[in-house]
Structures are given as structure tokens and as C-alpha cells.
Length: 71
Image (cartoon, rainbow, N blue to C red; front, side):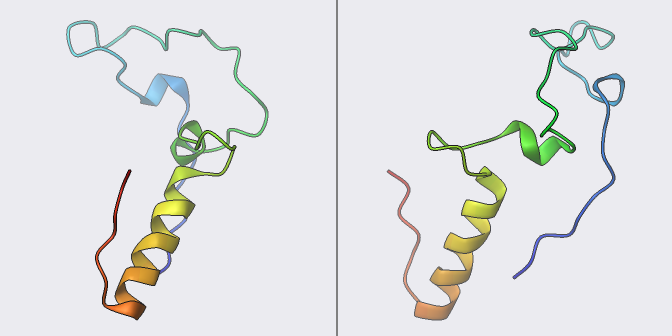
């Protein structure tokens, strides 16, 4: 299973608050250069991309026939 690469989204493309759809992210526009897509916003405590970690876990679950355990 391989995640598809999607077009990069800018902060203007995202809704940060349902009550204020024009509001920007709480940290403003000061983000790391390594964030090039929405998937890059989500990282694990050790710095790995969460989407890649979940993709690997799902693939391992499919190959082994065992459920995923999230702790």
C-alpha cells in the first residue's frame, strides 16, 4: 500500500477553525521549510512522518494478518 502524493496546500487553503474559516494557524506563517504538504504537519515524537508510519503499520498488518495496536 502506497500513499499518493498530493499537491501542496498553503495555509490559505486550510480551515483552522469552524467558527472562523478565515482564521490562520495558531503559529502564524512561521513554519519549517521541511513542511511541503499537509502530511508534513503531523510527525511522531521521534520526528518521523505520521502518515508514513501508519502506512508501514498498515502494510505490516496486511502482510502478517495481525491487527494494528496503537499504544
